[in-house]
Amino acid sequence: MADARLIDLLRVLRAHEVDFIVVGGMAAVIGGAPIVTQDVDVLRANTPENVERLLAALDELDAVFRGDDRRLRPVASHLTGPGYLLLATKLGVLDLLGSVEDATRYEDLLADSSWIELDGFSVRVLSLPRLLEIKRKLKRPKDQLMALQIEAVIDEQRRQRER
Picture 1 (cartoon, helix red, strand yellow):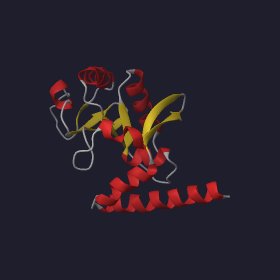
Picture 2 (cartoon, rainbow, N blue to C red):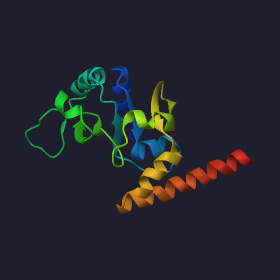
Picture 3 (spheres, rainbow, N blue to C red):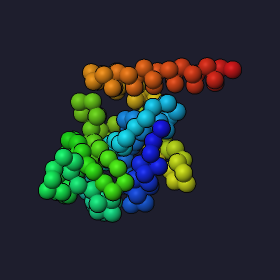
Picture 4 (cartoon, rainbow, N blue to C red):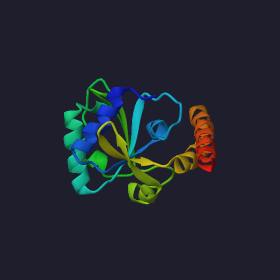
């Protein structure tokens, strides 16, 4: 289950027309996995236009780097590469990813994502099968546990379709 504030965080990104794909725990939740997530992970497009829109959204969200008492804000140069930014916002925790796996970027995952209606707005969400592939490659126990949960949901959804 996701905190309503995290949904509002996604709403702000969409209001600014930011190009992103919801990945991670939030993608699993939206896909029907019975997990709890306390952050939003998004894979961002790194085009100059998208960086500009993203900076406006981050300003509205009062986003600062997590774990840094100086309350530093991201700037355009932070958003153009394949790295990730761990941010705290007024609506919750946001992880902005430039790539997943070794070098899989936004454009690479478009075919594995779809638009999902969420509380009156649409977001692009990574498919559960593709999210499962990514989670299986990760070695953290929480990722391995999530992979098992995602696999169970995929199996249940398949059984439901076969009925």
